[in-house]
Image (cartoon, rainbow, N blue to C red; front, side, top):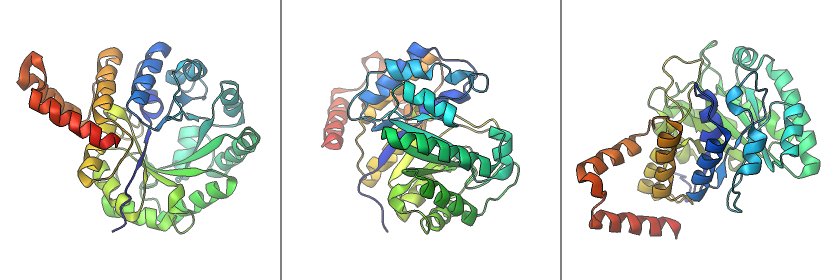
Amino acid sequence: MTRPATVTIVEVGPRDGLQNEGRIVPIEQRIAVIDALSRSGLPIVEAGSFVSPRAIPQMAGTGEVLRGISKTEATRYPVLVPNATGMRHAIDAGARDVAVFVSASESFSRRNINCSIAASLDHVAEVVALAGPQGIRVRGYISCVLGCPYEGDVAATTVAGIAGRLASLGCDEISLGDTIGIGTAQQAQDMVRAVVQTVPMARLAVHFHDTCGQALANVLACLEAGIAVIDSAAGGLGGCPYANGASGNLATEDLLYMLDGLGIASSVDIEALLDAVELIETSLGIAARSKLFAARRRQSARLGSGGMTRQQQGVAEAGRHARMN
């Protein structure tokens, strides 16, 4: 077993999560959520994307968001850019980290971003060329790594080939995404082991949606393969318009609870993260989908308005101290 001792969590809620919401969240509320997530100690929080507001109006104003957040030295704030035009907007807004997007499925690529896989890789090359002179870090996302809503199964060798291409173009990190959330643990582990034949494990991340309730199991299988970077969304934000019943991303707080149980360290204070999830519910009006948040709410209801007992507060404080050290 090769589980890592420490895991880096990439919080994707403010981008991958909010872009799938039916209503547009005001810029000041997006800023407040990102700031709350940063206060939890998350090392990476996606701030938005520079896509056409006609295509994804939920991400309009990402430049204002990026300029308005209270940045900390401990947190990076990547933004998604689809092409050279988006990259120029990101540079103008002061972005220091960007992400690009390709699919492992030709059909999904054409329906989702209206171009072929080959053309999307050309866009990646343009973005990387602009990023290099600015010293901007580029992350590559690959979607549909465990299945496509149009083509069905996706071969691990196909994913490995695209990952290798992204690495050769200059992507610093590559996130492997089960976009429609249909993969299982063995599939996920086998896919990672195929990709690592072309890209070093240290440059890989995983990104699971929880449509079929398998996201945590898939993460565990990938941890045992050696993965040490995991994408998730506070409150389980997100979804996929191409999968009926898609229930959003793996919830960051559920992931943290599992990591704590495994003795795997992260920089994140789970209580502060739950405060951020509470803000998402109360300020944005988006119901959290995580099991942990629901359990904590039931516990608070049983204890009444007084909240935790002194004993529980002591246990929580001891847990926070242990995690931070």
